[in-house]
Image 1 (cartoon, rainbow, N blue to C red):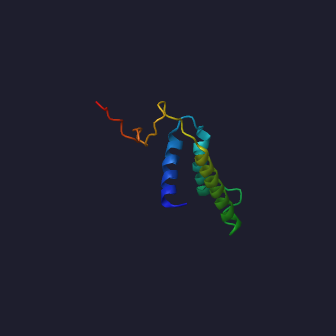
Image 2: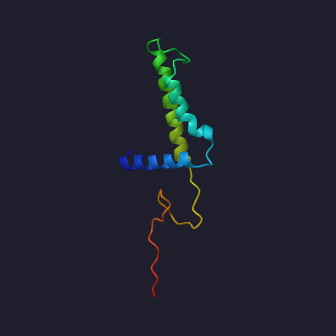
Image 3: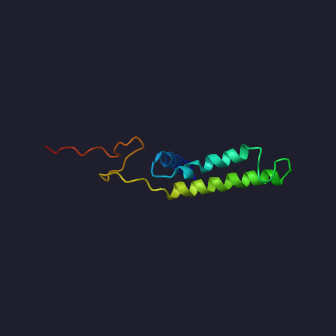
Length: 100
């Protein structure tokens, strides 16, 4: 993925988080994975050298892949007039000029 793809994914992620149609638990999945990573209570404690870190990384990577898939599958609600819009809601194309 190039820089343009990452930028588009980032703006799509922001729209995904701000959309009221997306359930709250889907929005919080990434946050909960980070909380699990930082929490001292794990399925496998962190003082076990390799396995303790691998379960944290597994949870973080699974949450990241899941969130990326959710954002890629996300389809925002189309605008009523069918005109493509930017993130601020302005039409992407200038209005047609009056020929008169």
